[in-house]
Length: 585
Image (cartoon, rainbow, N blue to C red; front, top):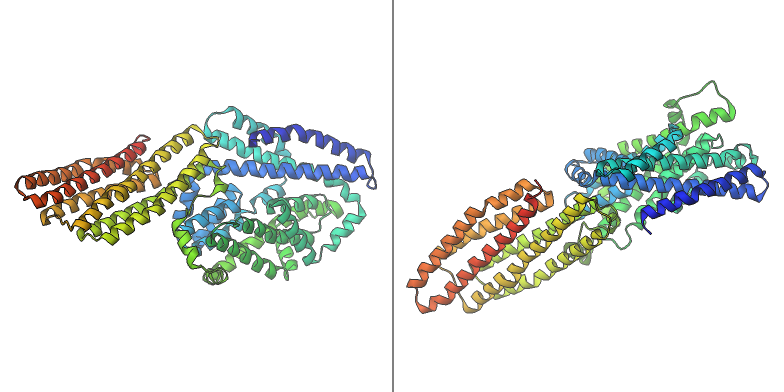
């Protein structure tokens, strides 16, 4: 069933559940089973709607951000401090620290970002993840139905992608607010239930609060949902401040389970990122657990006081903002203090999760960017394909350099090794094509579909360039080595110029694909005159040599002709890739 079908089904079922729960709550007293059944349906339905709203909002934000988020993460994380700022902003925008972490793991794996920079981003992501709790605490949930109405109309009736994404964001926010309202209404009878109030007063023990927060977050896989439930209980006046803070702290531990589960079957670098998250949160929680009173006083200091209220009303008015502020202060202070110990975190994580030789080789050969968890966000997934094509291009360029070196003094063993290394290129090409195939099965916008077909053709053409080196030029080199054929000095100089210009064309076209740069693609097309001129010079020299060379030189001349022709074929494939990109401008 598609996400849209699931959404519509929930919209059909949920009102009935809510009516049943409200009827049960209205008709039963607190000792009747129907009372608790109605409350369970209200809390469960509200929580389901909250989580669905989080998913809707996150997916829309990710789609709107697209590859821009990746550019921000890679270019603005020059040090741990800018990394923390970028992590906080990007997570605050997409409301998913796990998505930020997934992208960061890919960049670290590809050595685009150091682990130290990644640690800063992960620390900052904890700050960004507190935004939802702050929004809920500001009590704007009464706008839920307005957000849902406007968001649904924009996301379903407007064709422009950016407007639809904005509608999805509003729809998600409305569902979050409505879910919180439903949970709040379902919990309201607890204000008069003395047993529950007594139980909450017992949670003043920080260890109980930490345990409840950690377990609940691990079960529902959302620290924002746990904190939201705590704030809703506080808004009913039944959640004391210290209990709410300790449960919110526990949620910071429970959310680590999500990161750890996400590393199953992933390389060790992914586990390192998860371990950074675990260690950072554990250190922060274990420190503050002894200073919860001080954290509570600080939260009270920066929150509204409501001196005109008393009792349940005072607690209901003040506690939500205080808990939300305590959660934000906890993460901000932790990041501000622990970011100075980033090198220590890096050494500790390397010690806890060392590399093995087999892991290093696997990381070298396996895809680094392609992540199946981003397939449901095609704009981000297509961006990852571009980065992986960059790795494929690097392998092709490395093969070019090796062949050029081997052609200078042909050795049979070197060419045979190059042919074997092409298996790794073929495996990476196969992985990219499988990932693109999975993207193609998703619902794509018009622009995403165009980008999809562009990348599909580009990766096939780039693989064709690799095949020419492995299947044709390497075989030419093997013949040269076996028959001890050596081009003349003049011919070597001409071929070196041609080879260098073709290498530049391949390098530039790979960069153009990775950066989606039509200007650079046009520069590749502009190389045509220079490359044709170098090829013509080679052919003319070979033709002149053919007329005056002895019979024993004819085999060498044939090899020179073939090599020149294959280099022209490679540039022809570069031009085809460049034209794909140049059309978009």
